Amino acid sequence: MELKARKDVPVNLTWDLSLIYATEEEMYQDVEKCKSLRTHMVETYKGRLDTPAAINACLDDFRELIRLRTLSGSYCDLAVSVDYYDTYNQERNESLSRLFAEIFSDLSFIDNEIAGQDEEVLQKAIAMATDNRNYLQDILRNKPHQLHQETERALAALSQSLYAPYQIYNMAKLADMKFDSFTAGGKEYPLGYSLFEDDYEYEKDTEIRRSAFAAFSKKIREYENVTAAAYNTQVQTEKTLATLRGFDSVFDSLLFGQKVPREMYDRQIDLITRKLAPHMRRYARLLQKIHGLDKMTFADLKIAVDPEYDPKVTIEESRDYIEKGLSILGEDYVEMVRTAYRERWVDFAQNAGKSTGGFCASPYGKNSFILLSWNNRMADVFTLAHELGHAGHFKACNSAQSIFDTDVSTYFVEAPSTMNELLMAHYLLKTNSDPRFRRWVLSCMIGNTYYHNFVTHLMEAAYQREVYKIVDAGGSVNAETLNRLMKETLQSFWGEDVEISDDAAHTWMRQPHYYMGLYSYTYSAGLTVATQACKRIEAEGGPAVEDWKKVLAAGSTLDPVGLAKLAGIDITTDAPLLDTIDYIGEIIAEIERLSE
Image (cartoon, rainbow, N blue to C red; front, side, top):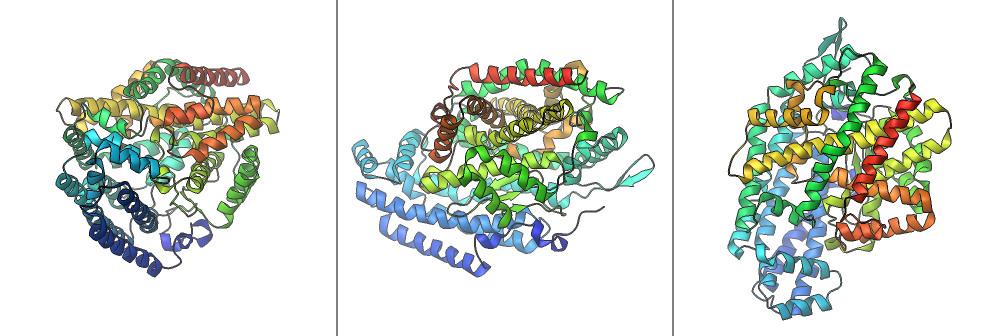
């Protein structure tokens, strides 16, 4: 059946943005406050940020402006994400983006003037600061890469244009791309982005699954050149900014904000590509044998080990699973889960024009908002638990930290979310000793949690690294190059065990993470931390849980190494990642034994 228009979706399946603002008028009142704050700050502080007191007073006002910007921006942006066909919401969001680009251009003097002060003044400002301390320390860290004040002002004014590639990508993908139905077994089936990614990729009927993949790939291929042009613009812009700011490479520039060295980035990609590939090839061969496939293709990699055993789960039933599965994190955490269902934090709906995949937005001072498309699968339960992991993380750090201290490094940010997936799996394993049930849970861990984070996103990261190498060397990329890089990346990982077709090569077109810097690799980094922390919780119980709660509350007051250390994990060595890869291999070996 065709996807409904947003207006026809039952309200109980949608999130409630009135939890941010009861009315649009209230949102615009905060926007006016932002304008007034901008005027006040320019008149009061510009040219006067030369004392510790003035610096901290200015940053106090700046924090409030950022808070209001976050709330109003989230309200408008989230409305667009569920319906890219709604032109009113798009125009409102774009208008707000233009306004804030103007505001932050006017306020770009703040960082420049602070960075221009003598070390003694800055240290005194840091000493007297409370909520501004880490922000000031980051200004000191960024000082070598700070540009002239007028240049920074121009870049801030151009922020909407700098983000245009991502907007173009989303418009092509979610608004312009219209899918025709496809035929399999003499029957016609509807097709759409979310229908394919959330339904047909997991379809147990091989003809339907492969036909859907072929039809989906044919359609997205029609947009390969515009998508490649948008992506090339993105990476060229990142390279130009890296050069302007004095970084040796675009990698150094993008990793600077994550506060991790290049070594930790490369380790994730190189070790997983080399060490995990043999385990996943065994898993692919197992799927081929179980399903009696003539060959294993890229379109077959997400099918279940035991599709007849995959239970259908309603939204209401998912609540019971998640409450019990995450109960080890304490009553406060479970109450957050209950509140999320009760107050409509989650947008479950399937409708035309809605963003694909899932995400969690957590505007400071408010609850979280989770987007996904519910398909009544246990995989959806794991996805929701994942996004609630983000919600729990930011509930803890937003409550404990200044808004300046909630910008957690993307290297670590997927740890709390993937931790929840593992806790759910461990809970399920304890509830039933039946071998078939155990095999199903273990296959969910491999087919969902580890495949998604250690394979899908890792392959994206390996491909992305090759793109940036070309850009760093002064080159550019087009659709032909991107198809070749993705195909070579997938073939390198899967070898002779999985057929990688030209359709598979087009999967680079499906991922918005490429417009978010070096993000794709962080899923495996976060899951590495989560795996080790979860193993510790299983072994030690309460003390490990308490340490994990401290990690969640720490926000960005610690870098990724410090956050992991607080959880009892040393990510400066290969050991956690190698142990996690071995753990994945052990799960696959057990699935093989249970399948005999």
